[in-house]
Image 1 (cartoon, rainbow, N blue to C red):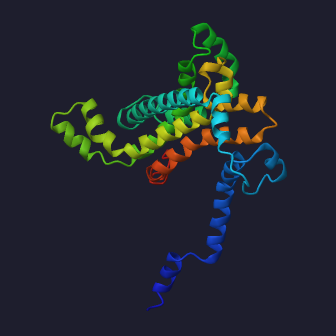
Image 2 (image 1 turned 30 degrees about the vertical axis):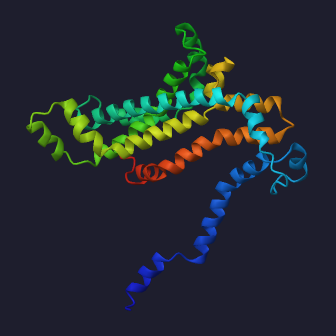
Image 3 (image 1 turned 135 degrees about the horizontal axis):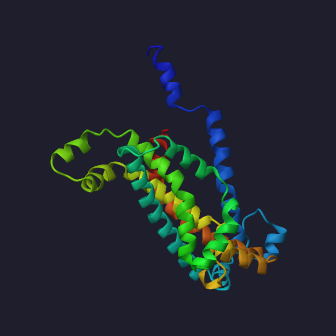
Length: 282
């Protein structure tokens, strides 16, 4: 074997230090979830005496009790509706906006990119007071659709930049050929462009949906009715009422986390591909 092949082999086989670093990072990421799962199967007394160890007597009844007391069924349904509507709305807004920015001659040029960067970096706390007043006047306060509209506005700028990065790198020959065949602008967008940017659209939708599922501040500000609360608020209310019984709180927290974990494990390949295949082009 020539000496030129040795660096290539070294790159293909990670060194022990690399495995140690990866193991520490994996433990850092998965460790809290394992502790949460272990505590959800313990009694409150066992958590006080052994908070980080394995459960001695597995208390599966904690999940049923937490499900009933924390009203997790209705809360998960509310969160599913909010997250799904947010993901779909952000996908539509980001896709159409990115297509207009890259394929249409909009006035202002790069000003739209600057506006998206600034709007995505501003803290939402600046707009809470006027939003509460405005939403109360419009009848959107304490309504899921009011919260969903705010999520559309908050998560769409970054999603637009992500989808735009894909569109910038796409060759326009396919679109021009479709136009020569008589396809209109809508047909070019739906039949040619949209299938090619599907990973970016899916990634933008997943990011927005997961963020809305875990979001707390806006939800606690704009949703007051207990029957309309998403799962994050339901878990918070349950924790405030059962601060000493960490076994039930842990069980409720694990119930909340499981849908996100399952979704990410199912979609992780497309999720990661959508992030790493393109950069945020400006």
